[in-house]
Figure 1 (cartoon, rainbow, N blue to C red):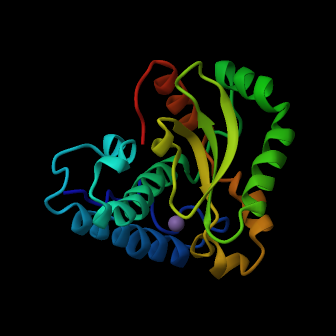
Figure 2 (figure 1 turned 135 degrees about the vertical axis):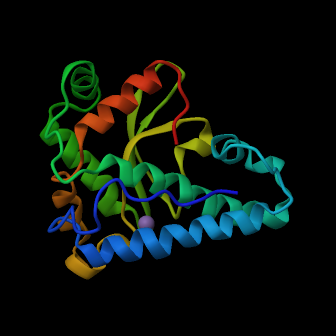
Figure 3 (figure 1 turned 180 degrees about the vertical axis):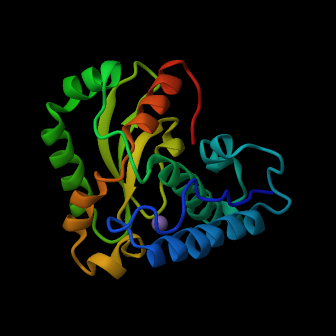
Length: 207
Ligand code: MN
């Protein structure tokens, strides 16, 4: 059985970038629903397997539950990553090895943010934008995915990512997804991203 972890900060800690009501609904209702529906879908199927293995081998599941596991398992993985990336008093910029790798892949920080935000704005409908880490060689790329799809489905990992479903921003930003994407960098904690990068480089598998 999968379960919802508490947030590592208070619901209002990321305001005004993300308001308290959005956090309450997004974590307590949307993410909880992904967890509950994943558990329902997996009932009797692949019990005991870890989420990374399940999402990396969706074809191994019966077709009757595959779609529900893809949507809700992806939702659980993506949101588990997302909450832990953010902090009320974040490290404002990357340093060291991560900074060098990001600059090599995308140019300076302004260029990285522009490309990432563009990926998020252009995702039609609901989805995510990620900096994806390819464990075969360590390349970094910016990719957007529909719905709750995740790089884990391709044997890759999110270094970090942002949720561009309307439920992530609509109460404060209404239809202005681009403004939300720009503001979100204010709460991204680069210390968390640096830790993920070090773990991924060391060969760990991360949700
Ligand atoms: Mn979401």
